[in-house]
Image (cartoon, helix red, strand yellow):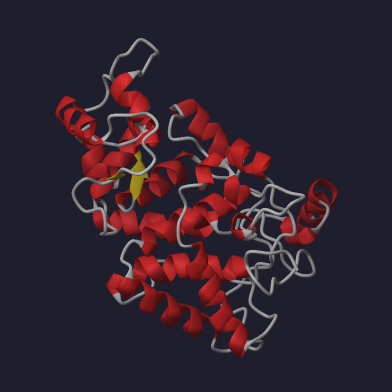
Length: 323
């Protein structure tokens, strides 16, 4: 009876059962439809990561940005048209990279199994496989069965993607809006252990934190001085800085070590130390085995946000365009 009531609630609130949190996803979804789908994606991803070691961070960030807008429906991959400005062109997404690689991986799957595997699943699997490639084992489970959305709007990306300038309260609310809790917030922030940022993501912390030409007092002074040698203009859109200044290409728990040293790059990183509960979680996640175990749970949860399944959405032929 409770299950029936839940399904009814999903229909009333969201319009289709398939959009309920995680509904319809399962292990080996493509086993009978395209037996080699996940292997094709894994091999194609690993081949490209071997050439470009920055792809794990790019795919992970892209997956995150996708799921936080309309759910994990590959809407972030869609190109703008004359009649619509898509998510991809929103400021938070203008620094994403790897779109063409996702398109290429999708094309390889299409050769084997046309019109079967969604771009949303390609992205979710490629993010996992790219990050896992160095470990020779999958770091988390990816349930599949997502379908692709038909809508991608710049306004929704601006409204839903967490800002690097957010304080703790804003971050908690943003994650709660997507059925993620404080633990998920702290754990998923650990993805900042790989990847880079442009100066615009933290420039205010160096030069104008409160609007008075001051520096963020919560930022390690020595680290701030180093960052100032790299970022000298708020309009610098080319200089990049590792989010983890020590192991920016290695997926590990070093993000939390750096955070404890007050060297978290973003205001949103430093915010995790402003709350007792989240600060305690940071201490726990210094243990890499603990971080990996927790990350596997939180990203699986994130990967189920607002998914389209069943007959909802579509299976895009090309990830950058609605059919």
